[in-house]
Length: 74
Image (cartoon, rainbow, N blue to C red):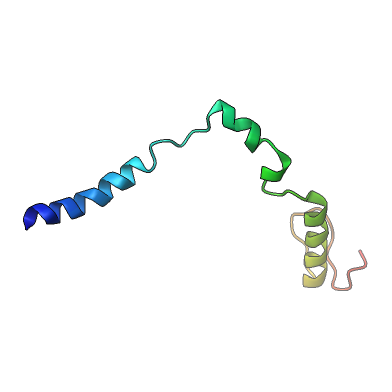
């Protein structure tokens, strides 16, 4: 009975440790990660427009490089 309990407690530990064994990117995988589709912001123009609309409606200015205002006419 205690042997089964030890196995049940030890098995998740082994799986958790070996799950993080390979954290690097191999050289043949870098070409896929360098594509525009893989960036965090795949559509920069759309993101800039969304940021402008958000900050105009919020009547605030952030660190985005444009002024605020509730009317959206800036």
